[in-house]
Image (cartoon, rainbow, N blue to C red; front, side, top):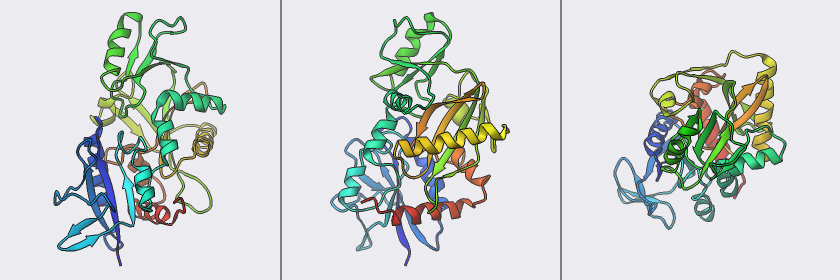
Length: 320
């Protein structure tokens, strides 16, 4: 009998359109002989779950769908909501109460990693190398230019700016505050930008996918670079084996330290062979244009087989 898989997309953030593209690509690569996939969209702040195909609301009491008089219950929830209420961990306790496995990290880890400032501070305390940063201050004597200004809890580089001199700082802060109440000013690290994805779908150990190097046509890897083709993404990255191994080992250690689950992407800037973690993405994009599917395609695993591994591992995981 086929297993029913709910792929959650949409949400309340600026990333909802990207989330829907991620879900569509995921469901298109779901093995139809093994699974029945349902694209479930959250359209508003009331967190109503709606079957995207039929526009029918799900029963929130047990997260079920009535289809032609038959109740559909789900074996697994794949959360592909970038931002609230998916990447923030807000849905975790709900699915745990229903004893339905879900693909993301738990609520505590999700809340920590979604707050960029708290995540950086935690990683620094655990002896990982991260940029220095300050929260909600624009007159600190320690600010050096250029610097990065970003909202503390927004994805896809919405609201992120590189600031080259003090005259541009207020404009960058105002942009960041369009996406979050709090902003952070972060040390700018000059170097090569690379990203590493880690997952726990193997029984034996954590696995890393081929690294990607990002060469942006813009000053930073912003929204236009990510989604409008204004960058080159090279997979596998053409870097020295020693640096690649260092990035992979750091990513695995950070994954363990943060108590993460599923597939997670760690973004780095490498300065003088020293990798700085600049961001942790617990629900990375999965659209055709996204980096993780590119990594999977360059690995030894077909994307359909990879998704099947994800599904089976998550269903069998005894977290709840």
